[in-house]
Length: 141
Image (cartoon, rainbow, N blue to C red; front, top):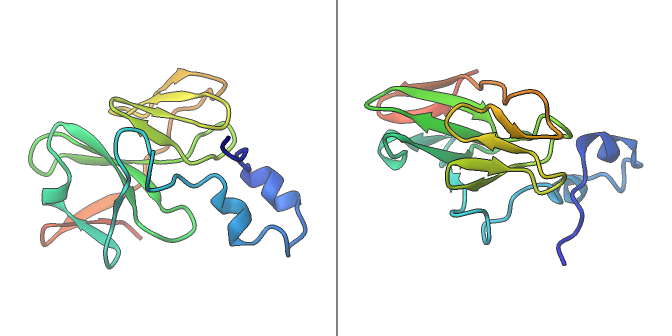
């Protein structure tokens, strides 16, 4: 049985000693069993554009406090980034082919547009600015 997902709100209510990195890790996707594929890990803060397939979406771990970003690539350098976290309670999403699923409460999002397919989430995934420089995709800012 998987441990329950710990929302950001609940983690903030815990005492500082108990809410350390381990508490928030309960919501982070694991490398194994992560939808249809493990998130791609960005090395040195970026990922090669060649590692992001055209006409598909790829969940990427860029590191940092909110590391998961869904990259949606069209053709060439047509690329959009979306948050990899549910807009309902902030749990990290799992990619299941053309959808992103929230393991906490069952919300589902379209992996190409970030739009809500199934609630309880009511807000689509916000865009995350990404840039392509020298063939590398990085979070902007």
